[in-house]
Image (cartoon, rainbow, N blue to C red; front, side, top):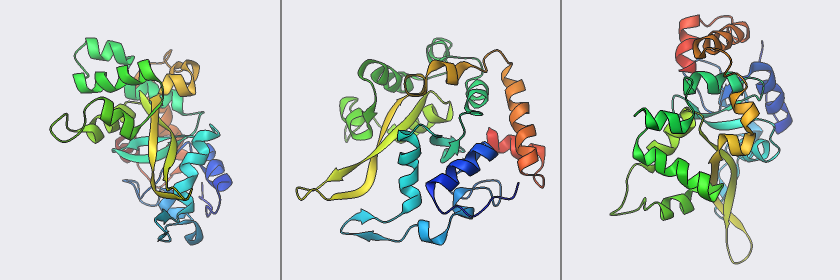
Length: 229
């Protein structure tokens, strides 16, 4: 597959639906990211009155609100996109057969991860700042929120569902946008997240490796495997 120049959110959706996976920034697989193929006009252009001018940065919110693509920190703790076709196998492999409660009961998730998962279960989708305030992630309180929320995304239990901006009294938006998170099953539906559970997790990995091997013919299976882990 030759990835065409990505100029619009429609281009991005088309590329991810064909490739199945696409990191946002340069990744461990050389030349395989949105950053590598985005049009200069859609990349970061600074800020005006505190509002970031970066079309590609806005696309992640657009595809989440439209439910066109899954987005989150999935690749080595860094952000990227996954198509709805491949997200079930990605979940199956990353979760290794566990729903979150079973993972916690078997001692494979810590109490901070459990705290965030339970909070979203009880309260629904919530902004980062709200979660951190309510769970006491502040000076003198709990530490390591970014580590926790990244791990939960890497395991596919928690996903971003929107990015919302702070608004000045004038009505002008500013900043980078605050992420709203939810449990993957609650936003994307249990069927999408668990429909590959009938397969062994290693079978899901093999299917993803074979698929990406066709997309990236010059990249070896071992390198693709590392990318997916």
